[in-house]
Every structure is written in structure tokens, then in C-alpha cells.
Length: 159
Image: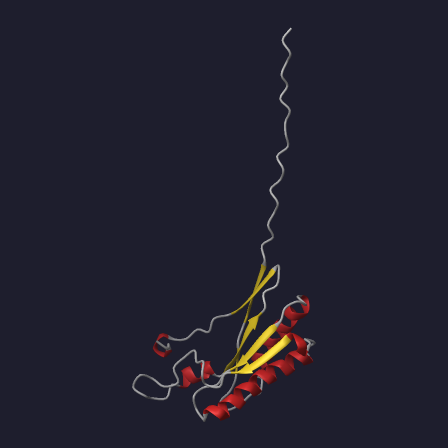
């Protein structure tokens, strides 16, 4: 007698799903000339960041203040720090503990746009983009937070 061969179905293990990290985009905060007061739009951006920080309690935030090139480097250093501090204070008032934040001021040393045109004329639109606070967020498992790139018009891009 020939034994009948029965093929058993072997269940293939399901491939383990690799979780896709959630991704969030946060926006920079812009300031008026010679000022570190937060606008309504800035506060709305910061409310979004505060919500994210409260939701993901392992995130840490680096806040960097910037200025345009009007005024002395030292004056702008203080102004850029005051901008970062204003952002941090607002976030604390929105419930984000200070220990999860670090602040720094770059003065006029890290522009995203030209302050003056190639023919040495004032570039108010470029200076406006330089008066800002930017953010870096520590990466934590399961979440990616990136800052929205600042859109600089072609004629104001730094080469």
C-alpha cells in the first residue's frame, strides 16, 4: 500500500508592521522691526507647538532667535535672545515646562534672506524674513517634528 502524502498548510507568519512615525510641521515665528513682542499669528503657531509638546512629553525644543542686520551685532544679540526668551515664556504660560526648552540668540549671524540687494539697496522683505525665532525638536521614537522651511523669494536668496 502506498501511503498518501498529505501536505499540511503551514501558516506564513504575518510580516510585522513597522510603525510609520507621525510627522508634524511647525512654523517659525516672525517679529516686527526692533521688537520681541509676539503677534497673534506667532501665538497661534506657538499654541500648536505647545499642544505637540504636551502630547509628546519626551520632545525637547531648541529655540533660536534671529535679527536682521540693522543695528550693532551686540544690540542684535540681545534682541535675538529676547525673541527666543519671549517664545519660551509664552510656551511656559501654555503649559510646556521650561526644562524641556533651550534658548539661544544668533544676532545677525544666520540670515535666511538678503538684508540688502546686490546693488546695496535696503531689502525690507528680506530683513522681515530674518527677524524670526526658529525651532529644532529632539527626535523621539514614533514622531518626527520638522520646521517648515522659510520661503525666500529668488531675488533675496543668499548665494
